[in-house]
Length: 605
Image 1 (cartoon, rainbow, N blue to C red):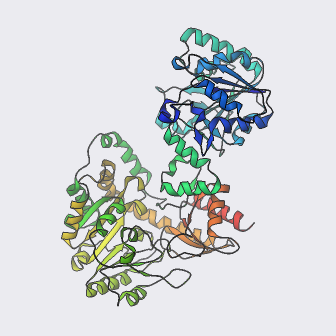
Image 2 (image 1 turned 60 degrees about the vertical axis):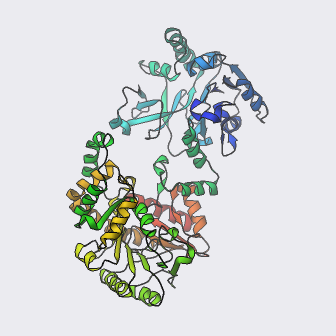
């Protein structure tokens, strides 16, 4: 068997990265794509490797000859690479296809060895390697039947987004038997080039072949094996994360702060979203209005404040809507002067907006990081603070102060003459019969020193829309925040969501009931695993102590490496120094079972 690599392209979409050398010379984590590919191929005892070069061809040849590759390498030169496409590069190598079974690869791929093994270990002589189509993918798409026959190659004009669940993307690695090349591929390749020219793609030939009664080529599907096609700098960034060394991969993922839909095999137990809302009907309503929303400006701040006020039963002069709660927190904290009281560990968006010398912190003195309103009043009563910030339930502890307890804090702050900032972004997850929110017009008017912050991303399950609100009985403060943020600070999708949300209140309440049931089962199952201690929580996440001989950093790393599961390691978070805790999200029953299984395997081995 031999390998044929197509490496003549210019890689224009990588811009300056390919200004002086070809695309496959671009480095991924310090190693060029071609070197990585050749070292994998070199392990497979091929008779030879044929490389078709073109743009910066001699530079590529010179570089490859410096590598310690034992397999014989033959170079084929495409002198007119600048006016042809990869069909012509393969045409130049067609005589080699007739001499031996071939693994055909494009040079802009990065993959683990297991990807190539899927082809080599499959007994079927001629195969196209494919992967389930994901929204970020581009290029050749096929449909398969249950026996992995290629039913059709989907052209761009025939591509239908509603059919994506049945689509597969070609990985651009193929296995051609010598017989298949002789009887099918090369004859059709020659005819295609003669009839339609050289500025085409070699997959077009396969498209024609699959129309035959006996095309003699099937597909083999990848599962969780890692691969990526690099066409631009964003692809390069993603690939560098996927193929990083263990510690670096975790670090790079953590620095993304989201966007994990680009990693379809990874399960995100780090970021916190309601797994049971929005419901499908709500999503369908948004989809039905997608084109209208894309093509129209959103309303300004005044109208969107009215939408938020309508949903929460407030006056619009007492509420401001933001591009996520984070935008409003930034604005709010810039308007609070003096020392600020807060609890650590906590959600750090608030203290991160302050100077260290302006923070007076309360640290719970127990392993559960639990505290009550009495603890806070006792600690802060003699402290010279201008505001107290409380996240309820707190993040990451899940500690929850009851409705009556919060009202006692409101009254204490009022008597003390300070602001009380209550972040109730996770309050709707609490399993209690008492009211969960202080977003109440009468309470706000009676307590103008109280500021309520709520992220709509969390409990309403739409972090991509970036929605949050701040409400206060002090109209001057709300007016100041509205003047501070942009008039168009939320987009049309966020506005539409707020506009229709009230119709789905009953579905939202049902989702919360379902969530509480699933969380209770989740806690019960996790508590059976040796090696972790589960702290009670009223939020959509659980604080877990990792017990010796394990530790939080290694557990986080092992989950990512072995199961592609991302959790939050708290070892570097304020208040956890020298301790071993992690935070894991509460997700759907099926997802929860996946992490329960993984934790059991790692901790109880």
